[in-house]
Image (cartoon, rainbow, N blue to C red; front, side, top):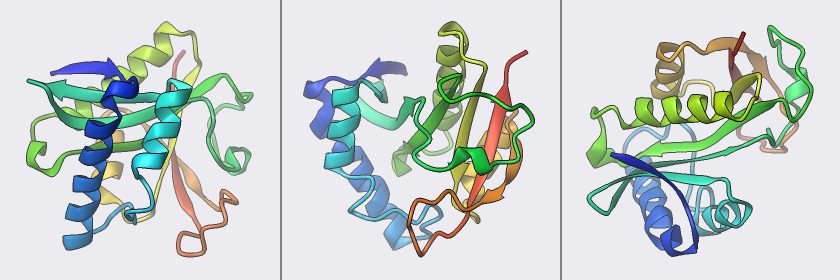
Length: 173
């Protein structure tokens, strides 16, 4: 397994991985409440253009992907964070997904470790994220990696089906 920083040439294969994930979620239990509208090729394209899209690759195949940036995309000031950190001093994990056929191989854990390592190397003070309430696989993964719960809050994203998001943080001392 290797982590790559996605470029234009990776767009189609990363977007296809997200499509397969969403299709699987729609056929089983859609914990994150994703749809073919998000995450989608357009959201991946925007993340690639901004230099924020990463993918976990093995033998030319995308096993998982995520977006990492310092933009929470919502009202993170509403969180019950253990430290009052200014915007731009923490990184935020978005759209972390593992291809269903690559489940139970440690791909998610590997990607979270990569996010934490990148944040530390770049001098950030924490990594934060939000999950849809009831997204048990994500909650377990982040808790296993040392993240702590920082409240369930309305992040003012204007998504009526998801009025609250559960917040998690991992602070560096």
